[in-house]
Image (tube, rainbow over all chains, first blue to last red; front, side, top):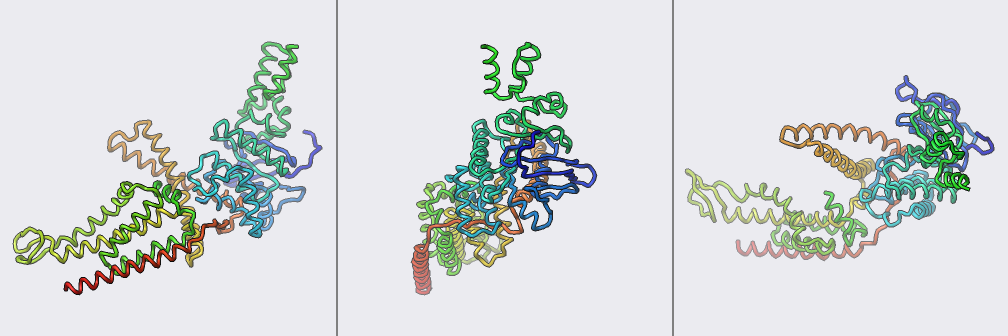
Length: 283
Length: 263
């Protein structure tokens, strides 16, 4: 991996175990580049959620270190409060996150916990509501919202805290295709406007080459692979070992190269790149 | 419950300050029960029903449908007041003689029964006015300002929110069970319902852990603070409350005088 970026989060030999015996996180070394989108891949139970909860201070590491913006994180009351302000998590099931029957109350919750002046709170809520496009549901009861609307409300609830890092746990799970692209576009928009670093856990490997700058693959609590999407998709065998697959386009390129002996770019993992390499063949 | 919730959110005065509505429903309710006057009860019943229908856009038929539920309880409760045992020979409006006693309705028991029914229904309509026009969240906000402990209100808020989540989850599970013929026959139904409830407990418990993590991630420190909603002022409704209470008081007084005159 190239190193000409500034890390916002670093973990060194991070270990965590729920029961004190088997390690759910086993010596995790990660470097999260600032202002980029980093994907976390891996099957269910690979340790993605546990890793995220450690970054936000809901869980405290058993051993190892976490650095935020170059400073080691101290897991005491003050340190955890500071960490939570700067790292926001959007959970997979918005029903777990939206605790209030009033959308406005839920969105404002994090801002109120920061004990900001009221004027500032209102301004932030207004901004987050505008960004996520939930103004028309603001006074509706939470249970009347659709899944996608709930998801956006959950993102607004994290945005009001003005974090430096937002963690999206399975942001596309359970959404219809237009909902998926809406959420991902929202992510790109927020990154553009506020330079927020995103971490996202996903099973949808096809969105990795489209939206992500870097990726980590976790397997049984260990980092199995990491790098840019291109670097990752070159290691096909290793990916398959950890029960992942190539993006459809990269798979097609692999087949074209291997079985049809065509001279295509096998790292082309998106439709536009695949189109480019196929067109260059035709010329 | 889900229906009433929807009605409350679509009421024309849903976004009004709940305090005014609280006043307008609770004071007449107290008057109804306090004076135990048939006239006051009936006036409240009709006024509240008409007002609720107007403000929520409910048809009278649907409103009566909602009123059927408390009527069922009322019927069972007042049956023993309407019908009593009397010594033989007493003049009754209707009754049967069994042995040395007669069972039936006397003028006095009829009066008592009607009195109880009208006050109870009047009170129910007051509560319906409140719950059909006030979303729960605005009531919670009102309670936050009251002397009630904050943790109690927080619990109410969480319970209210997760009733819907757990309800949906139960409905999905039931559909899945039905799809595999889980409710064919009584025996099978009881068994399926049992597993459903058991699983629901476990799921609710594990969800509890996830909610806790999500709250903590946003800085939970024991309180569910949030921005207060702003409501349209409801000062007018204090005036309405006073006027309505005066009407009820006058009706109750008139009834009292009339009864004294008739002996």
